[in-house]
Image 1 (tube, rainbow, N blue to C red):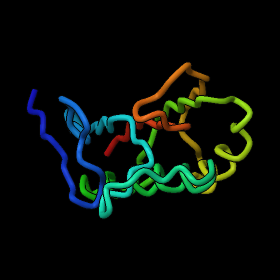
Image 2: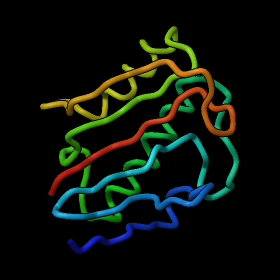
Image 3: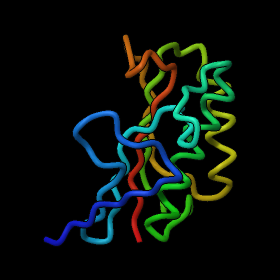
Image 4: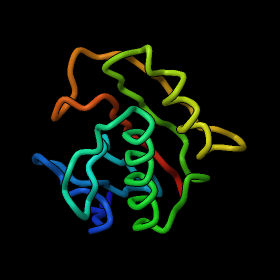
Length: 126
């Protein structure tokens, strides 16, 4: 099994002992992304829509670094601090998957890193 670490300066640096993504056996595992602007290194927490858009941008940059795009995504996990944000998060998330959306679960959690409101992890296949 040959695994390749995927890293791009266009997405936030990991804030712990993990990689942005790992590619193995034609499958890309993207670590949970939060709304960190990779260029200013600041959190985007003004509203759930802006936060979700930044998370999806970060995922897109990592997919691009692995020579993939959102059409390669087969599974996502969405973690929300407040399930009442689900309709807004779902609308933005859904705009990235116009056809053949991936499998997904969405769960409410007690707390997320850096006290963000949404985190999304992703699996994509080439």
